[in-house]
Image (cartoon, rainbow, N blue to C red):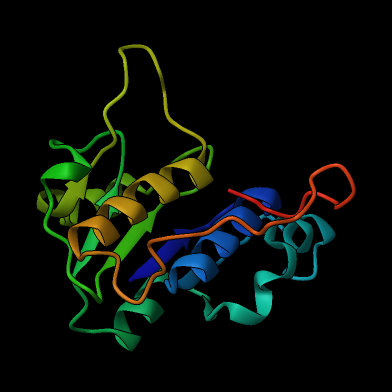
Length: 171
């Protein structure tokens, strides 16, 4: 799977998404302009120590991504979409394209790909979800449809004494 962030603005969101990508084996594609530097401490902190597990690439324009992956199957996430993300069928190499936190994807792009646009259902009056939450919701649905390939589905207790060991498990 591939996650595309078109002009992300908030480093903490992108860091959280990078961690999610690393934990799921998804590649991350960032489209400029970015609202931060890749060296931003908030970006790095939100991604914790997962950066070495992450495959990511930065593009100057969305068209550069399209040129690099001319046959890519893309799903565009927008609150303006005609159907739910659960109605889409996701392939193992699909791209999930998300817009920036404050404006979403450009309508000029959405008009060209409207048949491939999906949304996360929300109550009336809610503008949108946090970007990192939205990525996680849709990515995990796509992975669920594929049977969570190459992912560990079961965990086990560690046997640590909770009172003396620092808590290190993260959801």
